[in-house]
Image (tube, rainbow, N blue to C red):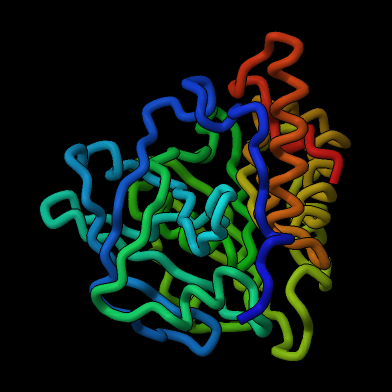
Length: 287
């Protein structure tokens, strides 16, 4: 078993346990019901969330922090996932894992998981949805790590709203599975199977080709450098932060634990200035 102590993120000031960070989230248990592999790159878990407030889990783009490893004497190692779909009547949810090589904490947990496996997670945290502004077009840009979020958003797409969406994935079937609500045009940005995610620049190129003025709002999620490029496109055309919902889910060559350490340090610096979580933007992370 690999030594995972370097994956621990210590919260020495208890910043993450405070009301400002936790909000209405709680620590809840899930039980794995089944594990499917709808595509070669994806493991899909159907789980039951043991919650007394299913309505809180029923909004689009809900993020959770799943505890994937325990190290004695330390905080649990956790990873962030998006609830793909949730049934409020049964409290059953789908969570997709993007498969990758190596012995990361998430992959080790997934390989050991079976129907009946239980785990703790913190949630729900509703993440951002597209900004619907009268007279403005909506651009959605995402790689495969954000496909569950895109699916959740499209499942709840408001009648009468329009958008253009660009999805980068090497797996065409994962793209084809996305819903097609009226008013939304989806574009597949194929990536060669041998090309690592986060190396093609396809999402930034799509943003540059499509966004030629400030008459857009932008929702984007994926690799951090790609997201930085998309923010630059927005800045070039005068699209302010209120018109950007852009999140770097991961960074090529950097572990999720290291990203979490940067997030925590940035949040602690804000708190020291008397500023809360509502003022923390993903763009503030200098990574």
